[in-house]
Image (cartoon, rainbow, N blue to C red):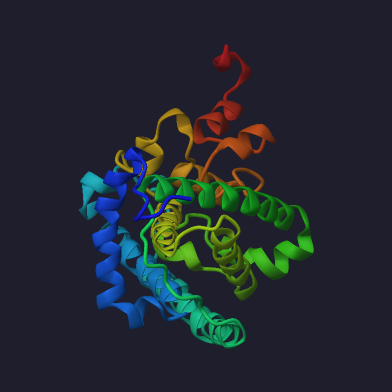
Length: 282
């Protein structure tokens, strides 16, 4: 293992020079905040709020913002203020009643380890971020598929998330307490298993919340990640919107490879093709 006294490998020096000053500032000036066991929860919830708000405004504007409304996937379905309030209220309720007490209990049993003095390299941050996303994607794909195939699990755990056929940004966390706690358990466990730096974990939290909100916005915007990342590697809003319309498809939360491998992928184009008369297909 490399250390500062022995010198750093050439490929990592620029990474350390980039992240170390930032990490030092965070540790020295914001230690009480970032060392708190509640910081990851605060980071995740504030990210959900900040990322969801602009799309909620777009939904309220509707066709009065034609530059954006033309990208709306289900133009005939528009969330109301009451629907938005219900989803946001449920997210607040779940965090106050279930998440906060769980964090308090777990931190009293297993105190937080001290923050490391060294920052990760950019390479470590990027590989850790990708690793966490890939592992979580596989976990949630299996969990999601099982809960759709088992009617009891679906009814008692996952059905709440399907209250709306057309998802919207606030509905990202329109979840039962069991589903939220399951997702939270993996989100906390995976970085530990992969031995990620706290900064990597926090960055992944923000990115994964952004990707989750993007899945639910109901707009196929040209600058969203599923459009920017090539080869259709990410499902994005079109895939998850289709899942809410056809719940036996598109189970993966982020990537598209598991749905392709197991034949559960579906697109709007494919569904339209199925509806065409045989003559028109020819």
